Length: 453
Image (cartoon, rainbow, N blue to C red; front, side, top):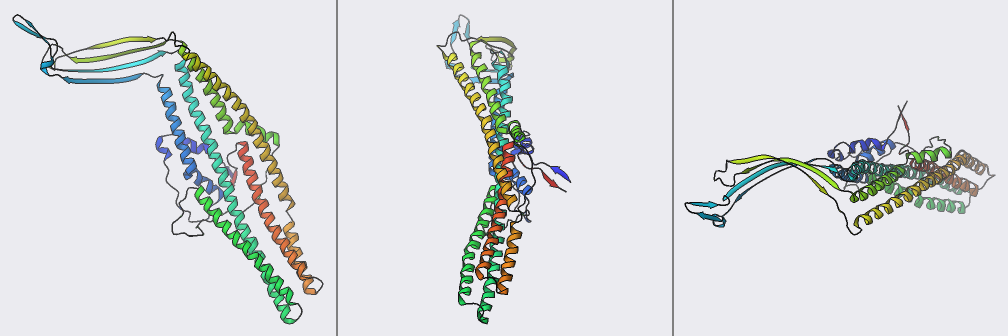
């Protein structure tokens, strides 16, 4: 056996590659029952929410590129051609010679490279902000992926629960149908009153709506799962979509103390990382706002070609290099820079408060999820032998009724208790699986470790 971990980092890795990696081919409609791991894989590939989240990451990467480009040299090239009506050209008449100040046609071309050198610390801050923007986008995307995977697990378990409810109601229907047949036989033999037959018919009729509702819940749950996984339901399918699940409701053993769970949540939750990164970004915002108190210095150099001013032949040109430096310093702006700095400081302080609040909320999430898991675990443990006991009670009630020492009420009550026990256990298994999935999410685990051959 080996351990595999379905992590959102695999999907994030595809995002950081190229822009084309955001495009995925839709997974075809399944031809066989799918496991939970299959559903998680499909969600990673084609969930509409995840696909939209990828584009948010791409957008953030674009912003990061803009920030980083501000500190790098810029290369530009330009050129032009101009033709002027000769009537607009001023001519100076000198005895024996007419002199015009420009040609009726001229051209020019140039290349230029410029590099910002100093901006009061803003340049390095923008470089750091570019990296932080990428980190924040990835953390937010990881949180989104974890939320989608959690929802897939819950909806998958809802489908399994609905399937179990159908089995439970069908089993109850079969028991009551046998009871009705037995009472009819007894009535015809004269050993049971008509009342017993009527009561069995009423009990049987009362179960049919429960079965119908369970079947409808199963159809709706499958539709929800298919939509969540990004499948287009075939137009020719009216009610029961062709989606089958391979897993069954089960309780995976899990043992972890609350302090360890809290430590995991604080260390692994992407929301904490995103908020911490945002605080760093706000700190860079203060640095960039303060930079406006200082001068900006840039240097530039290039090469230029142009036609001669006093030659009719356009092939004749002059060319040469250019170089220079430029400094700008806003000495007084009537409080504009100060206002920017104060606003940036306020955003930083707000981000700090939000970071502290996020830590508290993560701890609360873990505590709540852990408490709910313990409850689900205890409820499930209390139901371990209930079904066996309920089945034995039905057998004994029917045996006593056959022997004449019991009543029909005993049989019907035992059958109702068995149905309730099966329903309660199925719900307990579903609640346990969902509680475990929510605890994993609260701890930042993303998905559960799954054993495969």
